[in-house]
Image (cartoon, rainbow, N blue to C red):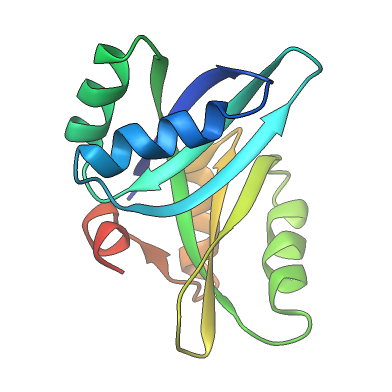
Length: 143
């Protein structure tokens, strides 16, 4: 039950993220979640969008390097300690979180976090056994 994320490699200079968001807007692609990781020269813009095919085509046509990556979307109790509980479960199972970022939802008692794990299938198994809800890609793209 993994979801697909798009990663775009961009120069770390003024306006590059705006270029990406403009291309996606023109293509009619809605950004659902994002995270940016940077170095002094380059960055990686990670996106969850409502249409990966359209996004990838538009960005590649504009000359961007795009890669698709599998991630896991997890419902987390939206309360103090909710994320800590998830991370403790993963720690006890010896599963490394390579990175994570939040998925914004407007209402509800649960937050959604996007995770990249070193052992995604094992992470899904462990979390599901603990009663944690893993969100499928189709549901994620419509939230």
